[in-house]
Length: 231
Image 1 (cartoon, rainbow, N blue to C red):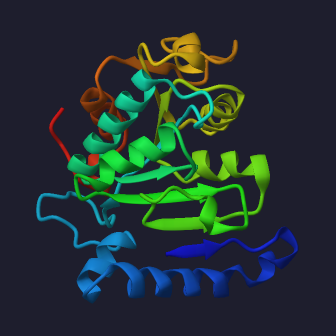
Image 2 (image 1 turned 180 degrees about the horizontal axis):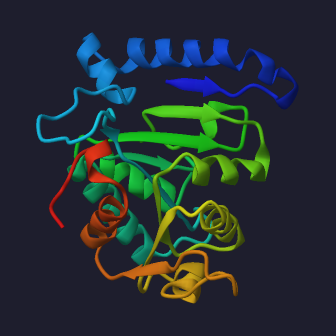
């Protein structure tokens, strides 16, 4: 499925756009209405939930090397991270292109997960073939803000300045951020550290994809999310 985001001067019609998006998701991905409700974050509250919040699937962003700089090790880590996201029941969000993004989506899809690619271009053909939903922003590098803001937590694998932008956005709005140890790039540079002297949130270092995903679940209120609780 392909979604085109409105230009800034068209934001006044965002309500109409959201309605169209939800309709497209329903028609393209789901067989019945109950599955549609799950994906749209309107899910039956579990019997052991002690509050009145509705729960939804966790959204985990995977950021890192694009295709031109991606190492074989980073691809392997990305695939395993995507796999663990799918197994956990979370939804994978990424920049939708190659490298870490493609291999994370591949891992998720091969384990029956759901993937969303938020691409900088207006043409959906730029997205990798493992994206269930392609959101065409047409915003260029500004799409990094959309990726980071759309997630409940961020997992970084390698990466350069683009990844650093996404980490900076996540850091500023206090998202849970995990850096995969040994993946190279800014993930190794900033893993286990803070991005600045304000020490807003730490960039948590993880050695295994399973633990990276579970840490994001643990940092979010479990009562609000559908998915893994095995920490």
